[in-house]
Image 1 (tube, rainbow, N blue to C red):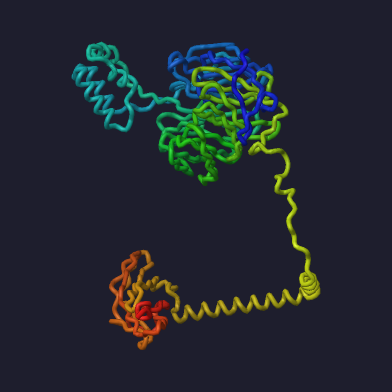
Image 2 (cartoon, one colour):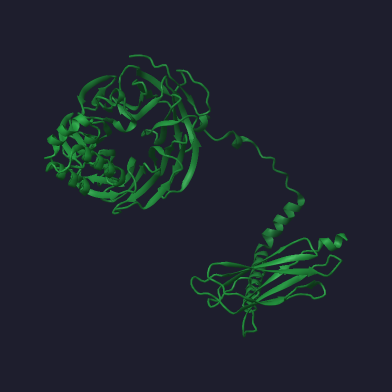
Length: 593
């Protein structure tokens, strides 16, 4: 067992040594040859003996030779090859029968491989999709020797560029061949039927009817054809199917399938879609400004890592709560849950070799590693409850154990109230006037309250009367009648003595135009002169604001200003529909001369 040359520090950034570190260095092997990501790591008691093992869906060096590895402590216990690259690994309980041992589900290609006691138990394959009719017709013609392989290649390439549905594996394999190999491939496969198979992109588990830790769970699959499938844990039939606008890459679920559940899916189009029980399509949508690189649910908050090097917190209805910038690009994310202290936090592995732990937007801890971490997993490993397992970019394996005395504190400060709480406030001494006023309020409290209530009622009455008078005399710039829905806004421009008065008149109805309106100005003729104080209004189309302009000439050289009343009238009616009072500014031009 090698000693790991990593360190961790608290939220304030002070470097810590082994004595005050929150973590014990259990194992470090830079040559472990494990290449995976967080979705392909799982911890479970696979044999029911209380010894938790680590399940790894290993991609292999360079994405070659994928394998399923099971680790016990620092050693690989079993290893088996996989037919395709793994997409996700999860452990779940299939039934209530004793002994209660969890099953292992590994998503790889179009299949989910289920293991019990590390032995193959069941293989679920995604249902096949209908092939493209044009592609099927081309292979039928090739079967009857009506087209040559070169023509078949050109037409398949045309279909691949224009069709929305992807081609089958047979056609894609044919397009990658050299010209000399095409004829043999066509002769070999032309008699076979075209099959279009989608693949699994992500997977998680959902409790079926109980929220207990060892309750029966369903598998939730995200597929390349923009669908979510919920599988029955015993019969492995599709219980529910939901559609998404894009391909899901990260999943987070909460609740129980038979009661109520929420499902959050981060997709390749940069959006996160929220689905609920009995909904075939998303109920809410969270639009991100960059592509998501991780999705973790902490209590009722969705924490999303983006390619803009930041963490974002959202509610399940899409409301953004906070944003935390990161010092480097985020490579992986996972949940840290310490059951003994009721702590849930987010772990983020960064490209600069740091692993940062956040509770909401507060930094709890920073772990520095020799290499960039590409996958994270926290939970019970062996017989230790709080174990952190990390794999690095170079294939290394790091195992750390959280000390039983470790306490995560926001900002790295000490426990207890903040220091500002112990500071004494400079409260002024009580004066004689203050004491007399207090005694007066005690003695005459009832009378003072009654006087206050009387004045408040009179104020409300006066405001109601003024409002009623304004409605009756059409003094409001907004019409309150449904027959003439109008809105008037006035604006004065200029320094004087000539001002430009612009009226914005708008028909606020939805579909009915208004015709036959007049504009009238009332003003002091000794102070102002208008070229026309009365004119007609053109037809008002609904929703548009019509600017009506006129000029006002100030006649006073003493800087006196007054109010100009603007009335909107209906032909044949004396009462105005609405009015506005324009407070004219003083003429600066005449005052200066």
